[in-house]
Image (cartoon, rainbow, N blue to C red; front, side, top):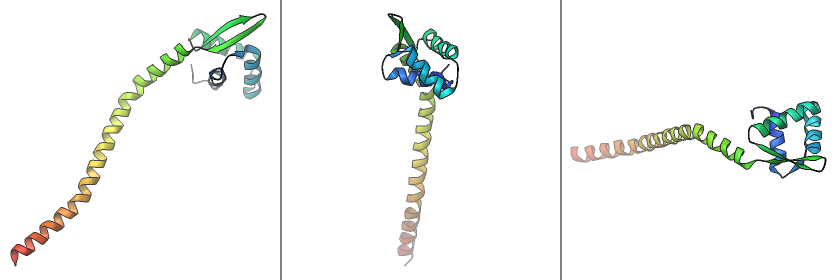
Length: 121
């Protein structure tokens, strides 16, 4: 749904505030070279999936971002990315432990050699 660049652009514009359908159509047509009916179809998809609302203002249609749809998408993405983020954090911690252990090992080895040499004398 949001993989389409024209839909993402429409959402970017709506995130700045309410926009008349004509303005949305003009910008997306110019940027993506698509027809007015194609832009209307993208707006319909956004409405049907809970990302945008529309209201009449005389003969104009005013679109707005539907925050509930955006919030639902953020929650869905968080469920997908959180487990991965936790695993990456754990991997980072293990790498840091390994680096600290590798740095400390030469010092321990050098200390053991000095201690052995003193005891041998």
